[in-house]
Length: 360
Ligand code: ATP
Image 1 (tube, rainbow, N blue to C red):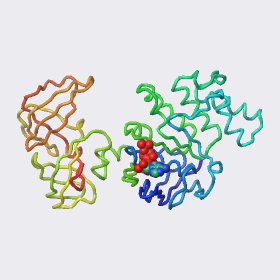
Image 2 (cartoon, rainbow, N blue to C red):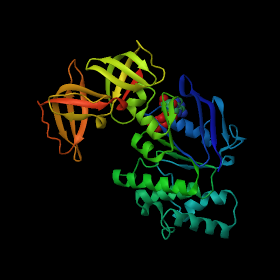
Image 3 (cartoon, helix red, strand yellow):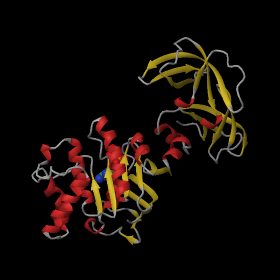
Image 4 (cartoon, rainbow, N blue to C red):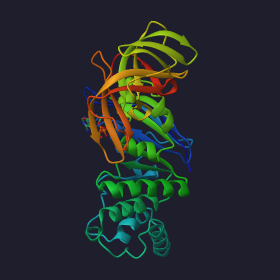
Protein backbone atom coordinates (compact mmCIF):
# COMPACT_ATOMS: atom_id res chain seq x y z
CA UNK A 1 0.00 0.00 0.00
CA UNK A 2 1.14 3.50 -0.84
CA UNK A 3 1.34 6.44 1.47
CA UNK A 4 -0.45 9.62 0.44
CA UNK A 5 1.15 13.02 0.69
CA UNK A 6 -0.46 16.41 0.18
CA UNK A 7 2.00 19.28 -0.15
CA UNK A 8 0.80 22.85 0.08
CA UNK A 9 -2.49 21.89 -1.54
CA UNK A 10 -4.64 24.93 -2.33
CA UNK A 11 -7.95 25.36 -4.13
CA UNK A 12 -9.60 28.66 -4.96
CA UNK A 13 -13.05 29.06 -6.48
CA UNK A 14 -13.02 32.74 -7.53
CA UNK A 15 -12.69 34.66 -4.27
CA UNK A 16 -13.35 31.62 -2.08
CA UNK A 17 -10.27 29.83 -0.77
CA UNK A 18 -11.79 26.38 -0.18
CA UNK A 19 -8.47 24.77 0.84
CA UNK A 20 -5.41 26.74 1.88
CA UNK A 21 -1.86 25.39 1.82
CA UNK A 22 -2.74 21.94 3.16
CA UNK A 23 0.22 19.72 3.95
CA UNK A 24 -0.58 16.27 5.25
CA UNK A 25 0.97 12.81 4.97
CA UNK A 26 -0.92 9.58 5.51
CA UNK A 27 1.37 6.66 6.28
CA UNK A 28 0.87 3.44 4.40
CA UNK A 29 -2.11 1.55 5.85
CA UNK A 30 -3.16 4.46 8.04
CA UNK A 31 -6.73 5.69 8.44
CA UNK A 32 -6.86 9.48 8.74
CA UNK A 33 -10.12 11.30 9.42
CA UNK A 34 -10.43 14.70 7.77
CA UNK A 35 -12.74 16.42 10.22
CA UNK A 36 -14.36 19.83 10.17
CA UNK A 37 -17.60 21.77 10.05
CA UNK A 38 -19.69 22.11 6.91
CA UNK A 39 -17.95 24.13 4.21
CA UNK A 40 -14.42 23.80 5.64
CA UNK A 41 -13.03 22.22 2.46
CA UNK A 42 -13.19 18.49 3.17
CA UNK A 43 -14.94 17.39 -0.01
CA UNK A 44 -12.82 19.72 -2.15
CA UNK A 45 -9.68 18.09 -0.70
CA UNK A 46 -11.01 14.63 -1.49
CA UNK A 47 -12.00 15.64 -5.02
CA UNK A 48 -8.50 16.98 -5.69
CA UNK A 49 -6.95 13.71 -4.48
CA UNK A 50 -9.33 11.68 -6.68
CA UNK A 51 -8.58 13.91 -9.68
CA UNK A 52 -12.06 15.47 -10.07
CA UNK A 53 -10.85 18.97 -9.14
CA UNK A 54 -7.58 20.54 -10.27
CA UNK A 55 -5.59 22.18 -7.43
CA UNK A 56 -4.80 25.88 -7.75
CA UNK A 57 -1.43 25.13 -6.15
CA UNK A 58 0.39 22.28 -4.44
CA UNK A 59 1.21 18.66 -5.17
CA UNK A 60 -0.37 15.25 -4.51
CA UNK A 61 1.89 12.22 -4.16
CA UNK A 62 0.77 8.61 -4.08
CA UNK A 63 3.77 6.68 -2.86
CA UNK A 64 6.62 8.18 -4.87
CA UNK A 65 4.32 8.99 -7.81
CA UNK A 66 3.32 12.62 -8.33
CA UNK A 67 -0.31 12.31 -9.48
CA UNK A 68 -1.22 16.02 -9.38
CA UNK A 69 -1.82 16.09 -13.13
CA UNK A 70 -2.88 12.46 -13.62
CA UNK A 71 -6.45 11.72 -14.78
CA UNK A 72 -8.72 10.05 -12.17
CA UNK A 73 -8.47 6.57 -13.71
CA UNK A 74 -4.67 6.61 -13.40
CA UNK A 75 -4.72 7.31 -9.66
CA UNK A 76 -6.26 4.04 -8.41
CA UNK A 77 -8.33 5.75 -5.73
CA UNK A 78 -11.32 3.80 -4.42
CA UNK A 79 -14.15 6.20 -3.57
CA UNK A 80 -17.25 5.86 -1.43
CA UNK A 81 -19.77 8.69 -1.26
CA UNK A 82 -22.51 9.59 1.16
CA UNK A 83 -25.19 8.85 -1.45
CA UNK A 84 -23.61 5.52 -2.46
CA UNK A 85 -23.83 6.47 -6.16
CA UNK A 86 -24.73 2.92 -7.20
CA UNK A 87 -26.10 2.35 -10.69
CA UNK A 88 -29.81 1.61 -10.07
CA UNK A 89 -30.26 -0.47 -13.24
CA UNK A 90 -27.30 -2.77 -12.44
CA UNK A 91 -27.27 -5.62 -9.93
CA UNK A 92 -24.92 -5.65 -6.95
CA UNK A 93 -22.50 -7.89 -8.90
CA UNK A 94 -22.64 -5.66 -11.95
CA UNK A 95 -22.09 -2.54 -9.85
CA UNK A 96 -19.05 -4.09 -8.22
CA UNK A 97 -17.73 -5.48 -11.51
CA UNK A 98 -17.88 -2.10 -13.23
CA UNK A 99 -14.41 -0.87 -12.27
CA UNK A 100 -12.81 -4.18 -13.27
CA UNK A 101 -14.52 -4.09 -16.66
CA UNK A 102 -13.13 -0.58 -17.17
CA UNK A 103 -9.69 -2.02 -16.44
CA UNK A 104 -10.34 -4.63 -19.18
CA UNK A 105 -10.06 -7.70 -16.95
CA UNK A 106 -11.30 -11.05 -18.37
CA UNK A 107 -14.72 -12.40 -17.34
CA UNK A 108 -13.58 -15.34 -15.17
CA UNK A 109 -11.19 -13.09 -13.21
CA UNK A 110 -13.91 -10.49 -12.76
CA UNK A 111 -16.37 -13.11 -11.51
CA UNK A 112 -13.83 -14.46 -9.03
CA UNK A 113 -12.79 -11.03 -7.69
CA UNK A 114 -16.40 -9.84 -7.35
CA UNK A 115 -17.42 -12.99 -5.45
CA UNK A 116 -14.40 -12.64 -3.15
CA UNK A 117 -15.05 -9.02 -2.28
CA UNK A 118 -18.82 -9.53 -1.81
CA UNK A 119 -18.04 -12.31 0.67
CA UNK A 120 -15.54 -10.06 2.38
CA UNK A 121 -18.13 -7.32 2.97
CA UNK A 122 -20.81 -9.79 4.04
CA UNK A 123 -22.92 -9.59 0.86
CA UNK A 124 -22.33 -13.11 -0.46
CA UNK A 125 -25.68 -14.34 -1.81
CA UNK A 126 -27.04 -10.84 -2.55
CA UNK A 127 -25.16 -10.32 -5.81
CA UNK A 128 -28.23 -10.67 -8.04
CA UNK A 129 -30.25 -8.02 -6.24
CA UNK A 130 -30.71 -4.46 -7.47
CA UNK A 131 -29.79 -1.51 -5.20
CA UNK A 132 -33.49 -0.76 -4.51
CA UNK A 133 -33.81 -4.26 -3.02
CA UNK A 134 -31.11 -3.55 -0.42
CA UNK A 135 -31.16 -1.84 2.98
CA UNK A 136 -29.11 1.35 3.45
CA UNK A 137 -26.35 -0.62 5.20
CA UNK A 138 -26.23 -3.18 2.38
CA UNK A 139 -26.07 -0.43 -0.23
CA UNK A 140 -23.19 1.10 1.66
CA UNK A 141 -21.38 -2.25 1.75
CA UNK A 142 -21.93 -2.56 -2.01
CA UNK A 143 -20.36 0.86 -2.47
CA UNK A 144 -17.43 -0.25 -0.31
CA UNK A 145 -17.05 -3.47 -2.30
CA UNK A 146 -17.05 -1.49 -5.54
CA UNK A 147 -14.32 0.81 -4.21
CA UNK A 148 -12.19 -2.05 -2.86
CA UNK A 149 -12.46 -4.52 -5.75
CA UNK A 150 -10.02 -2.54 -7.90
CA UNK A 151 -7.30 -2.92 -5.22
CA UNK A 152 -6.95 0.83 -4.85
CA UNK A 153 -3.77 2.47 -3.62
CA UNK A 154 -5.89 4.67 -1.34
CA UNK A 155 -9.46 4.56 -0.19
CA UNK A 156 -11.32 7.88 -0.06
CA UNK A 157 -14.54 7.95 1.95
CA UNK A 158 -16.81 11.02 1.90
CA UNK A 159 -19.26 10.95 4.85
CA UNK A 160 -20.03 7.32 3.98
CA UNK A 161 -22.34 6.73 6.95
CA UNK A 162 -24.29 10.00 6.93
CA UNK A 163 -27.42 8.41 5.43
CA UNK A 164 -27.69 5.58 7.96
CA UNK A 165 -29.65 5.62 11.20
CA UNK A 166 -27.74 6.08 14.46
CA UNK A 167 -27.51 2.42 15.47
CA UNK A 168 -26.41 1.14 12.08
CA UNK A 169 -23.96 4.02 11.78
CA UNK A 170 -22.27 2.94 14.98
CA UNK A 171 -22.09 -0.70 13.85
CA UNK A 172 -20.69 0.34 10.48
CA UNK A 173 -17.97 2.44 12.11
CA UNK A 174 -16.54 -0.62 13.78
CA UNK A 175 -17.05 -2.67 10.64
CA UNK A 176 -15.18 -0.20 8.41
CA UNK A 177 -12.41 0.09 10.98
CA UNK A 178 -11.96 -3.69 11.15
CA UNK A 179 -12.06 -4.10 7.36
CA UNK A 180 -9.59 -1.25 6.84
CA UNK A 181 -7.17 -2.81 9.35
CA UNK A 182 -7.51 -6.22 7.77
CA UNK A 183 -6.84 -4.87 4.27
CA UNK A 184 -4.21 -2.41 5.53
CA UNK A 185 -5.36 0.16 3.03
CA UNK A 186 -4.34 3.83 3.28
CA UNK A 187 -7.63 5.64 3.91
CA UNK A 188 -8.80 9.24 4.07
CA UNK A 189 -12.19 9.45 5.76
CA UNK A 190 -14.08 12.72 5.48
CA UNK A 191 -16.58 13.50 8.23
CA UNK A 192 -18.06 16.39 10.19
CA UNK A 193 -18.90 14.01 13.03
CA UNK A 194 -16.22 14.22 15.70
CA UNK A 195 -17.36 11.03 17.46
CA UNK A 196 -16.95 9.14 14.18
CA UNK A 197 -13.48 10.60 13.65
CA UNK A 198 -12.31 9.73 17.16
CA UNK A 199 -13.59 6.14 16.97
CA UNK A 200 -12.28 5.36 13.50
CA UNK A 201 -9.06 7.16 12.92
CA UNK A 202 -5.41 6.48 13.65
CA UNK A 203 -4.97 10.23 13.33
CA UNK A 204 -7.40 13.10 12.91
CA UNK A 205 -6.78 16.19 10.75
CA UNK A 206 -9.01 19.07 11.85
CA UNK A 207 -9.78 21.49 9.02
CA UNK A 208 -11.50 24.86 9.52
CA UNK A 209 -12.07 27.48 6.82
CA UNK A 210 -9.78 25.51 4.54
CA UNK A 211 -6.88 25.65 7.01
CA UNK A 212 -5.43 22.66 8.87
CA UNK A 213 -5.77 23.41 12.59
CA UNK A 214 -4.25 20.28 14.09
CA UNK A 215 -3.16 16.80 13.03
CA UNK A 216 -2.71 14.13 15.67
CA UNK A 217 -3.93 10.99 17.41
CA UNK A 218 -7.56 11.13 18.63
CA UNK A 219 -6.46 11.33 22.29
CA UNK A 220 -4.15 14.23 21.50
CA UNK A 221 -6.86 16.14 19.62
CA UNK A 222 -9.35 15.54 22.42
CA UNK A 223 -7.14 16.16 25.46
CA UNK A 224 -4.58 18.59 24.08
CA UNK A 225 -6.31 20.76 21.46
CA UNK A 226 -4.01 23.51 20.22
CA UNK A 227 -6.69 26.14 19.63
CA UNK A 228 -9.96 27.04 21.35
CA UNK A 229 -11.75 26.41 18.04
CA UNK A 230 -10.55 22.77 18.01
CA UNK A 231 -11.43 22.34 21.71
CA UNK A 232 -14.94 23.64 21.05
CA UNK A 233 -15.45 21.51 17.95
CA UNK A 234 -14.29 18.22 19.49
CA UNK A 235 -16.73 17.07 22.15
CA UNK A 236 -18.29 19.27 24.82
CA UNK A 237 -16.17 21.53 26.96
CA UNK A 238 -16.35 24.41 29.43
CA UNK A 239 -14.39 27.56 28.70
CA UNK A 240 -13.17 29.87 31.43
CA UNK A 241 -11.36 33.07 30.47
CA UNK A 242 -8.20 33.71 32.45
CA UNK A 243 -4.70 35.14 32.60
CA UNK A 244 -1.51 33.15 33.03
CA UNK A 245 0.15 34.21 36.31
CA UNK A 246 2.85 31.54 36.47
CA UNK A 247 4.37 28.84 34.30
CA UNK A 248 6.79 26.04 35.04
CA UNK A 249 7.35 23.65 32.12
CA UNK A 250 3.89 22.44 31.04
CA UNK A 251 2.31 23.52 34.35
CA UNK A 252 0.39 26.75 34.56
CA UNK A 253 -1.36 28.86 37.15
CA UNK A 254 -4.23 31.00 35.90
CA UNK A 255 -6.29 33.74 37.45
CA UNK A 256 -9.94 33.19 36.41
CA UNK A 257 -13.34 34.54 37.49
CA UNK A 258 -13.75 31.26 39.40
CA UNK A 259 -10.48 31.80 41.30
CA UNK A 260 -6.92 30.55 40.88
CA UNK A 261 -6.76 27.42 38.72
CA UNK A 262 -3.84 25.08 38.13
CA UNK A 263 -3.70 23.60 34.65
CA UNK A 264 -1.63 22.15 31.84
CA UNK A 265 -1.52 24.03 28.57
CA UNK A 266 -0.14 24.65 25.08
CA UNK A 267 3.58 25.27 24.63
CA UNK A 268 3.10 28.82 23.28
CA UNK A 269 1.44 30.22 26.45
CA UNK A 270 3.52 32.64 28.50
CA UNK A 271 3.15 34.41 31.80
CA UNK A 272 0.91 37.50 31.49
CA UNK A 273 -0.95 36.20 28.42
CA UNK A 274 -4.73 36.00 28.12
CA UNK A 275 -5.89 32.42 27.97
CA UNK A 276 -8.94 30.21 27.74
CA UNK A 277 -9.19 27.30 30.11
CA UNK A 278 -10.96 24.23 28.74
CA UNK A 279 -12.36 21.67 31.18
CA UNK A 280 -14.47 18.76 29.94
CA UNK A 281 -17.73 18.09 31.82
CA UNK A 282 -16.79 14.47 32.47
CA UNK A 283 -13.59 15.52 34.25
CA UNK A 284 -15.41 17.57 36.90
CA UNK A 285 -16.57 16.04 40.17
CA UNK A 286 -19.45 17.38 42.22
CA UNK A 287 -19.11 17.35 46.00
CA UNK A 288 -20.85 18.72 49.06
CA UNK A 289 -20.96 22.42 49.98
CA UNK A 290 -17.77 22.34 52.08
CA UNK A 291 -14.70 22.12 49.82
CA UNK A 292 -12.47 20.99 52.75
CA UNK A 293 -8.76 20.81 51.99
CA UNK A 294 -8.06 20.07 48.34
CA UNK A 295 -5.38 17.49 47.67
CA UNK A 296 -2.36 18.76 45.75
CA UNK A 297 -3.08 19.34 42.09
CA UNK A 298 -6.87 19.37 42.50
CA UNK A 299 -8.79 22.58 41.73
CA UNK A 300 -11.87 23.18 43.89
CA UNK A 301 -14.47 25.89 43.30
CA UNK A 302 -17.71 26.58 45.15
CA UNK A 303 -20.95 26.89 43.24
CA UNK A 304 -24.71 26.46 43.10
CA UNK A 305 -26.55 23.92 40.94
CA UNK A 306 -28.81 25.81 38.53
CA UNK A 307 -30.04 22.93 36.40
CA UNK A 308 -30.13 19.15 36.60
CA UNK A 309 -30.97 17.15 33.45
CA UNK A 310 -31.40 13.39 33.28
CA UNK A 311 -29.53 11.93 30.27
CA UNK A 312 -30.03 8.22 30.96
CA UNK A 313 -26.62 6.94 31.95
CA UNK A 314 -25.54 10.40 33.16
CA UNK A 315 -26.88 13.48 34.86
CA UNK A 316 -26.00 16.81 33.29
CA UNK A 317 -25.61 19.69 35.75
CA UNK A 318 -25.20 23.43 35.15
CA UNK A 319 -23.29 24.84 38.09
CA UNK A 320 -23.00 28.57 38.69
CA UNK A 321 -19.52 29.30 40.06
CA UNK A 322 -20.05 33.05 40.21
CA UNK A 323 -19.08 36.00 37.98
CA UNK A 324 -21.49 34.78 35.32
CA UNK A 325 -19.65 31.49 34.79
CA UNK A 326 -21.84 28.38 34.37
CA UNK A 327 -19.94 25.10 34.30
CA UNK A 328 -21.38 22.02 32.70
CA UNK A 329 -20.72 18.90 34.78
CA UNK A 330 -21.64 15.32 33.92
CA UNK A 331 -22.12 13.09 36.91
CA UNK A 332 -23.14 9.50 37.51
CA UNK A 333 -26.85 8.73 37.21
CA UNK A 334 -26.95 8.21 40.99
CA UNK A 335 -25.69 11.75 41.71
CA UNK A 336 -28.05 13.20 44.30
CA UNK A 337 -27.52 16.97 43.91
CA UNK A 338 -30.58 19.03 42.99
CA UNK A 339 -31.15 22.50 41.55
CA UNK A 340 -30.45 25.09 44.26
CA UNK A 341 -27.90 22.92 46.15
CA UNK A 342 -24.61 24.48 47.25
CA UNK A 343 -21.79 22.32 45.85
CA UNK A 344 -18.08 22.14 45.29
CA UNK A 345 -16.82 21.39 41.79
CA UNK A 346 -13.36 19.89 41.59
CA UNK A 347 -11.10 18.81 38.76
CA UNK A 348 -7.53 17.63 38.44
CA UNK A 349 -5.02 20.17 37.17
CA UNK A 350 -4.05 17.57 34.55
CA UNK A 351 -7.62 17.73 33.17
CA UNK A 352 -7.69 21.53 32.86
CA UNK A 353 -6.20 22.66 29.56
CA UNK A 354 -5.11 26.25 28.92
CA UNK A 355 -5.13 27.68 25.39
CA UNK A 356 -4.00 31.01 24.04
CA UNK A 357 -6.55 33.71 23.25
CA UNK A 358 -10.03 34.63 24.19
CA UNK A 359 -12.23 32.91 21.63
CA UNK A 360 -14.28 29.76 22.00
P1 ATP B 1 -19.77 19.79 3.70
O1 ATP B 1 -19.42 19.07 4.97
O2 ATP B 1 -20.97 20.70 3.85
O3 ATP B 1 -19.85 18.89 2.51
P2 ATP B 1 -17.05 20.55 3.01
O4 ATP B 1 -16.17 20.72 4.20
O5 ATP B 1 -16.94 19.29 2.26
O6 ATP B 1 -18.56 20.83 3.42
P3 ATP B 1 -16.47 21.86 0.51
O7 ATP B 1 -17.61 21.23 -0.23
O8 ATP B 1 -15.11 21.35 0.24
O9 ATP B 1 -16.74 21.80 2.09
O10 ATP B 1 -16.52 23.43 0.24
C1 ATP B 1 -15.53 24.33 0.73
C2 ATP B 1 -15.85 25.76 0.27
O11 ATP B 1 -15.68 25.87 -1.13
C3 ATP B 1 -17.27 26.18 0.56
O12 ATP B 1 -17.26 27.55 0.91
C4 ATP B 1 -17.98 25.97 -0.77
O13 ATP B 1 -19.08 26.85 -0.90
C5 ATP B 1 -16.87 26.29 -1.75
N1 ATP B 1 -17.03 25.52 -3.01
C6 ATP B 1 -16.97 24.19 -3.14
N2 ATP B 1 -17.13 23.82 -4.43
C7 ATP B 1 -17.29 24.96 -5.14
C8 ATP B 1 -17.46 25.26 -6.53
N3 ATP B 1 -17.50 24.30 -7.46
N4 ATP B 1 -17.58 26.57 -6.88
C9 ATP B 1 -17.52 27.55 -5.95
N5 ATP B 1 -17.33 27.33 -4.64
C10 ATP B 1 -17.22 26.06 -4.22
